[in-house]
Image (cartoon, rainbow, N blue to C red; front, side):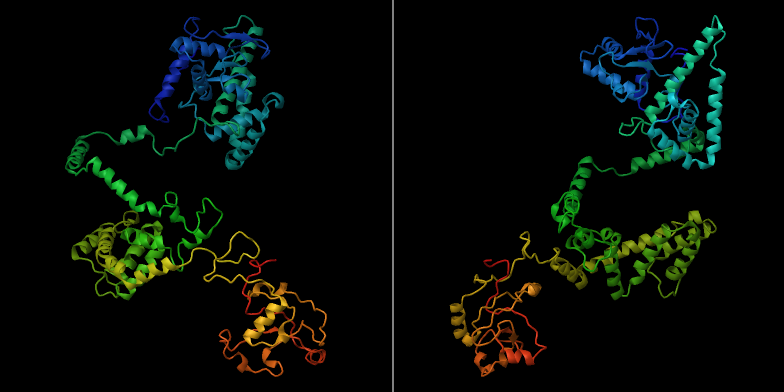
Length: 603
């Protein structure tokens, strides 16, 4: 059967396709001509199968394309032949992945695909049920010749789970096709001279059909990692032929079309320059709020670049304090305010103070009704009308009589038709929306609530504060610089300091001095040093007011002693005192004259 005789027309109910496929089909028809002059000459190969299968090589198709279309570049001809192979108009006999890229050599052999399996054919659709039947048929046949590949077996198992209710139908169809293949329905006895030739013809047709089916599903269900050239678009609910039958032209339809076109002519049409100018203005206005265009819009850090999730936390649907850009965006338009959940809540609080909360509540109720279930539309409309549109109701909104009359008339006409009642409150909702936009929204932007909200958003910190002890990566800047004094002072320096501050020389013991940071108190030296000659142990501490012969008047003029609490300093205690006071806590608390952090001084 020649290619020309198997050509099938594509009707209007088939899937839409590009015109390039029609050109490919004409090209394949010209290639398959058997006159030997204009078509490709096919040669029989015995080393591939037990029977002679006619095929052609990559050199044959590339030479034909160069000769037929005057292509001088070999790469261009190979690219065109590769497209023919990847879209399923020709297929390699060995089905290797490398063979689907046509090369200018004789390493791979190809055959023409039957027109029944060409893309975008009405009867050659590649739906999942047909694919399941094809895989089931292969699983019922010889495992060595027709066994499923791993990706095909995985796909077959998934399809059986999806079509669990059609499992018997799939198996029955597959067994029927296998039985037909074994019964020899492809028998051409009237063309054969003997029974042996008839069997050879039947076997050859069976082999070719298996190759064509495998090539068809290799294009529509490619292995993992291969490009799927035949992407299926959205499925239609109505066929074009059904839609054309509905659009039957008559006198009324022509009148409606003329009326529509007259209104279209009267409709104002802006100039293209004005449209482009408005788009540019809109882009400049909203550019600073787009994290992809402006890095400052993704403070404190861009979550698409870094792993910091603080941006999602501060820009959540409802937060305690919104960001500054979020508050500024509310001032651009009333739509930006009401579409933001946080802005809508702030606007509700403002209207509550102005005793006009019923307006925003009515607008929200209608929005919820539009997006709600169909079964509750009629009851919701009745409740909204009785609560907000009826006279002398406690939450009556300010709607003019004309709008109210339109709503009540539509409500009576659509009674009992919930599918038509979803949008009958749109006139009243639009009236309230414009009222809030022109009256309440400008007063909200001038209110103290919005001004205070902008100040709070501007002053809120967006960076997490933490101490980096010994990390060296991030150090918090101090408001006042620390004096660069040594971490541990010498005995002579401590004597001078003690004389200046009024301290007794008895305090000049070798006690390590630390900063006021309480985060590293556990790291302080808790080991006791040998007792001095006076019998005191420097490991014990006590209040300076407990020192014998010491009064508070000594430190009255010291500017550092402004609080009632005193920081304890290391002070020697006798062994008898230490034994008597067993509950005394032994800590080396830092002195106040050394405020150097542990990571800043000389180690």
